Amino acid sequence: MTDSAQPSPLTEAPSSVPSPAMIDAPSDESALTVEDPRKDDPSVPVALADDIPPPDNGRFVHFPADCPPLLSVIIDAEEEFAWDSFTRSATSVTNIRAQTQAQALFEPYGVVPTYCIDYPVASQEDGIAPLRDLMADGRCEIGAQLHSWVTPPFDETITRTSTFAGNLPKALELAKIRQLTEIIGETFGIAPKVYRAGRYGLGPNTADALVQFGYEIDCSVLPWVNLRPRQGPDFSRFSTTPFWLDQRGGLLELPVTAGMVGLLESVGIGATVYRRTSTPAANRWRVPAVLSRLGFLNRIPLTPEGTTLSEAKKVTRWLAERGHRTFCVNYHSSSLAVGHTPYVRNSRDLTAFLDWLSGYLEFFFGEIGGQAATPGEIRLRALGSGRAA
Ligand SMILES: [Zn+2]
Image (cartoon, rainbow, N blue to C red; front, side, top):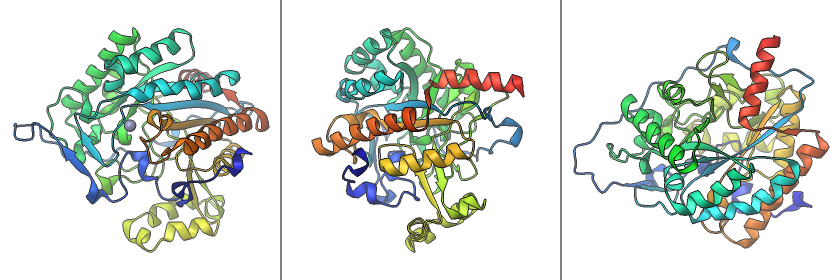
């Protein structure tokens, strides 16, 4: 039944190109506006960071064949803001109390979602109270998400480049991660273990900073997508397979689950063709959309935001058949309150969104025999499979 949920115009867009909202950014970057009340003050200069090298083969984590598919739910828990503008003043987090709607769907299956909360959520009662109650009952875990533009210290001017925290000078990125980690410690009484860079803004210094503050898992890699044209990192040589980000047995990278599906991938050239055809010029000629229509190649992220339920099932089966064992459903907390994201504009959209979640959970735990696992539990299994190997 949920398969037939009416797709919104956005879900009909070919998902072979990264969904704009997945990176909190408009498709037309020229429309991006930034506002900084202190723009006349001297500020720390921010330039595009160096490339992050993709992992060598020895650092990938492969799970034994008898390991069931494992499902984590990771939610970007954040303020309501217009995704085409970045300002220090948009910090309202009233959407957090709406998370109970999805919690009710998770709990029958034993899914304990991870809310990667950002500074506005961690520092205001509207964000803290609903999540503290869930956490106290063991119904959720709390991770961290860095939205650089609303996290002190505010030493940088807001620009497109600075919204990717990995571009910040090392000391400033570290200082923001410190403040975020400390405020979560103060208000939730825990040391968060899971980190996500807002806008997938992982940088060359991020792993060092995370290790310093005791993080064990990063989930900032957006497989196959080159964000360079938007001043972000180039992930075009990263896949959806987990890997050790710093060293074996250290910080586990759990990339956003996104499958490359289609004929070209089944003959082993999907990633290469995707890289060559996801350029602005090829997009102008709608090459990725045509490849997707023909069933040749389609990049499908595992999210109710812009991916239909049947696509999500398809990519899950595709990856599971090829030995992939870790699946992360991702979405933004603000999608659960009507009117804040492009995906949930009215109550009908919200119903379809919740139907997607319940349909996917039913499929994952029924049809394909999966198990729920938090990112921390996945890391423990990864450590175990490393020892066995
Ligand atoms: Zn975000």
